[in-house]
Structure formats: C-alpha cells, structure tokens
Amino acid sequence: MESKQRNAGNTGNRRRRDRAARMQKRQQRQCAVAEISENEESPPIRQKRPPTRKKRIKEPVFQEDIVDGFAFLCFKTYEDLQVSPSMACTLLNIK
Image (cartoon, rainbow, N blue to C red; front, side, top):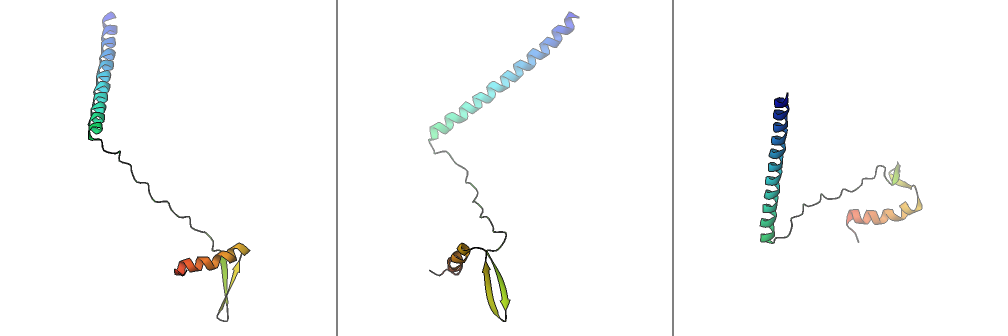
C-alpha cells in the first residue's frame, strides 16, 4: 500500500513541478518581450475606437398632410416648430 501512495504522490509532485516550470518560462518570455519594447522606446499602440453611432429618431418630428397640392405640417411642440427651419437649412446646406 505504501508503494501505491508513493507513486501517487510522485505523479502529483511531478505535475506541480511541470506546471511551475511552465509558469516560469511564461514569465521569462513576458519579461523578455517587455525588455525589447522598452529598448525600442516607441509609444504604445492604441486601438482605434469604433465611431459612435448616431441615434435614429423612430418617429418623425412632424406629420405632413397634403390637401389640394398644399403640404401642411403638424408639430408636436412649439420647440419642434422652431427647430425645423434650422434642420431644413442643414439638410440643404443653406446658411
């Protein structure tokens, strides 16, 4: 029975040693990469952020009714009425 326990203990110890050796190698590689990058003295490379997406308005700000060829606009609020000419100018690129 003692021999079985010793063998079981040896395999566990070997696994730990192997794992420790792998971890040490990994740390050495990381240190080597860090030393190389320090020697180059180049600024760190940042990944570009994706452009921010504009929120789309689900409903139009106004409703349009056409009667006998004339267009009548109905706005929900007075502020929407004031903003609409400036929005039209920006859409048509008029200053």
